[in-house]
Image 1 (tube, rainbow, N blue to C red):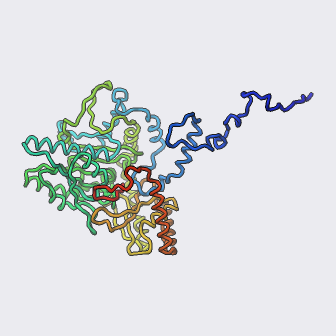
Image 2: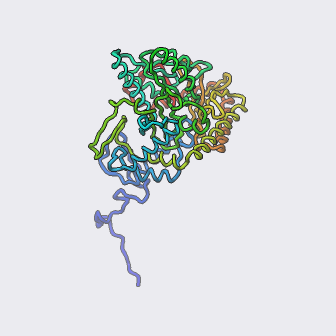
Image 3: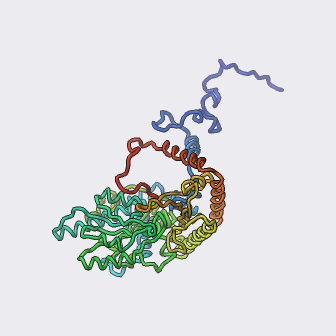
Length: 501
């Protein structure tokens, strides 16, 4: 028997019998009411949103970001193994500073400090002069801490001698990363620069030592300039400074900014003397999230011994359940990044790091060879492992397009490549930089060369007016994205008008 059914009229339907579509629900995200409503941008929304809808909409927006794997501008790690990512995900909720609650996480930091201090040849023959170190959110924080330690130590010595503590100064190359300028400005230290020239893009040791006086709290030497990848000559700087200190009864130290080179040089050029093997190198910073092969943000500050870390900067606290000695600008942070760093150190070991760093150095050299074969570019960076595994280059002659136009056109292929001008006193030099990271394989390098050649071919065919229009459009888009109205148009009082990282 088959029953006869009737279609119920709308007036007989109760609210509970309305369809999901009538209620605003749908089995597909793009069929919901949220897909035709603006996503909240400035105010907290009144109603909730399903988790899958919020996730999808945010993911859709993030799709407009560049692809990290094609980002040749950044030193920051874009690849970690699945096991490392799993460890990080499992430990994201741990607050690293809760030593009592998470003692093993704290122990892993101690192990990292020991491994890195030994990698940098810290003298460990005397128990009373053991190296000290701390994890940070990156090299910027580590540099702030190092500058603060240098300033406080200088002030302590000056007070003990009954001398003025006014007008401390710090000497560095004009090619420093902007965090050094921030450190000096925030901590009220005068900046003294060794400027770049047409032939010298980094600090000249002789000129740096000439600037030293009784108010100098230290000299910064960079192991891997962000502009061209060059290693500054720390050994010569140390030897000249030893003479200057002895002749003038000074005790000016050296801090090495090894943000990028600290995890490269020990494996590619182990005989290069830049670290604690030199007596005046008192502190070193390094970024774990660069060639330390961890995701951002993790960095390290290492001091030669406790002698160079003034006690008044150390806070001993116990309100979290155990006695803790703290020297940091941050407090609460996830333990995940420290754990990830320890994973990388024990996973790779010296052999693994050596293999990776030699591979990316060879890839950088391969890129240099391919660029030189075009006959169009001058290479400004080192090769053969004598500097960072990056390639900085510029056009050999004047064209109706420049390095910025090349970088803009490469973006159409998905590549993110920085074009910029050199550090102060050499600003007339325009250049392009490609950072070779672990995941920039030889195959991907050849893909980049292919797209670069296609870009050059296209620019050759375009007239100057068309290129100028494209350049202006790009600048207009940049201005439209500037929403910090309070500082729009503000000119930095410092000399540097651009800064790359």
